[in-house]
Amino acid sequence: MSPTLAEVRGAARRLEGHVRCTPTLDAAVGRNPYPDLLLKLENLQVSGSFKARGALNKALQVPAEARARGLVTASGGNHGLGVAYAGQRLGCAVRIFLPTSTPAEKLRKLEAWGAEVVLEGAVWDEANLAALAYAEAQGAIYVHPFADPEVIAGQGTVALECVEQAPERDLYLIAIGGGGLIAGCALALKALRPDAIVIGVEPRGAATLQRSIQAGELVTLDRLETAATSLAPRRSEALNLALIQAHVDEVVLVDDADLRDAARWLWDEFGLAVELSAAAAVAALRSGAYVPTPGRRPLALVCGSGAPPA
Image (cartoon, rainbow, N blue to C red; front, top):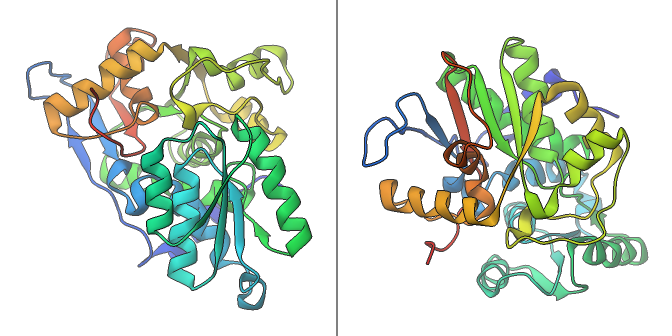
């Protein structure tokens, strides 16, 4: 069941007082300025990324007696933090299944938020199978990181803020992992600004959605070859693919070296400490993977915090 603009707006009302309206930052001044670029700083969101929006929108719609059985999910890290925040906010237990490649810093943060952490499998897809099995066995509420209409609607609230804060923007660059963020944002943006262009950005070593779009059906990657682990599921889901096919104009690829360059630029120029995945939208511009048409006014979503780049 595909979410609608009305449901994104409903999520925004539901999330009032639970998440931050994050600021935008003009990138026009600096050592390497981009005169027309605006950054939307979801790295300053509570829990460190936009994921808190979708997780809370889902959890807030679960009856209290069901929430008492606990929340469970699988995550590359950021979604787990969002679910852990939702659990702390709503007073319910949280168990997070993560691949063994998850950085130690994210494990520490999850435990600090009060989540129980279980390492399972080499990639997210394997951790997710374990999370689903646990949820079924224990009757816990499973919160999918990207293929849930309520999660997608929550992520789409980022786009509502963008349009309100910067109504002149007509080009949006958004990172893609499983596709929840761009699905929610793109459906809202195309409803509010039909003339806007929405560009998705994936790591070249995890081109899950680009390959699926080209094939016209879901593709499962044989292997993942990127250090941007939170943008690296081997497979998306039908709901996300359909929304991206309907509302996203193009998906471009960036190399890990481009991600590192963009993350370093965000740190050097603005003091923004972000993980590689969060720099993907900026990387598309800096690397030339996407070149805006003259006159377009871009907004790049900086979607998650992290340690300063080495």
